[in-house]
Length: 190
Image 1 (tube, one colour):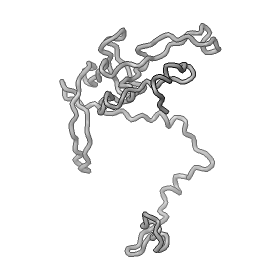
Image 2 (spheres, helix red, strand yellow):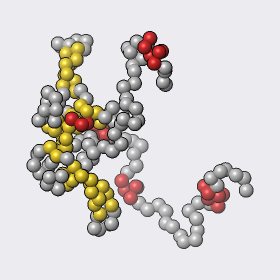
Image 3 (cartoon, one colour):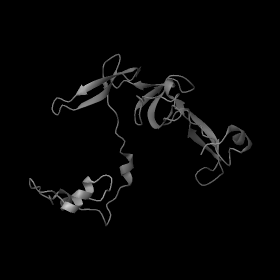
């Protein structure tokens, strides 16, 4: 929900936080850095240090690097923080970091190149380091799988692999009335 700026000036940011995202014209259209990439900070207090990207905020052109650009935040005392102070990662603008070349461990600019798999013929866009030409693979984040557990309603692997339908040429997989309903996009009565 958007309000006119005269109304927003009168409201407290505690009651209604303001939207901090950039207009669409100022947002980056193509992102070469993704979650899980190893980057090096080029400016600021952590200059020269490298870390892994833990989060990417595309609406603000910023990213969070694990263990870098830390700030102290005051919170109520609890069992977790007896002093009432915690360390919090702050965002870094994407222009202040560079991808790390895996072969040299130095920051590098990248170029995008098209790779064609010789076996399947599938095309994909890959990232290559400018200086050495080393391929920089995209890290697949599978951290969401850590909490997965088999439950009572999960299907057994043996049942999943079993073939339950064999196609016959010339015979549709469903009855005629169901096929007509699937084909009939606009729900017209025949």
